[in-house]
Length: 142
Ligand code: HEC
Image (cartoon, rainbow, N blue to C red; front, side, top):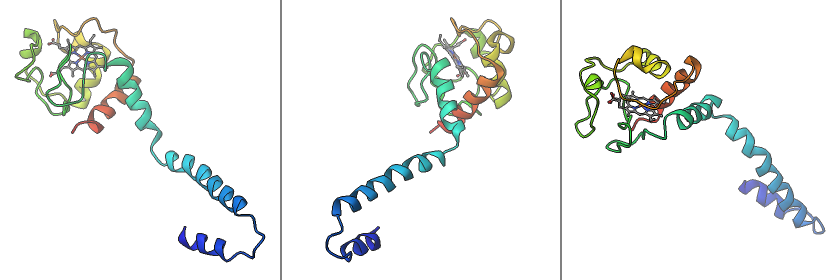
């Protein structure tokens, strides 16, 4: 950029500075979308999937329990194990550790994984959405 500026200054008089500034702005405009495109597209749709289906009741922040328990580091966390959240007894006694597979199945059909849980009213998501959400849960854990 500095080299570019210098070469601008060395232009013969009469070259419109405004045209040069315009070209600079254009370069910026053109480079912005491509730098965004470098982010994997799935990042965004994963966050979106979580926002659409889970965020009303769940936060990703440690200690931030809402209607549902926070989901920070949920992959690898024991089901029903947060000390400061009032789980249903079925969730408290589920007796397993959440992994990707369990989480995906729970999102699709909560009752088949932890029967009698109180994650209500929750409509369920498709397996495809659930896969995206799991990716988000892992990426967003602090
Ligand atoms: C309508 C509110 C609501 C929505 C929407 C919701 N949940 Fe829940 N969730 C709850 C409640 C309430 C519990 C506690 C269940 C219990 O104790 O039986 C829970 C529990 C959980 C647990 C168990 C946590 C633990 O500490 O063992 C996971 C995992 C979970 N939800 C994931 C999700 C995901 C992922 C989504 C989005 C696809 C989602 N939930 C959408 C209310 C909700």
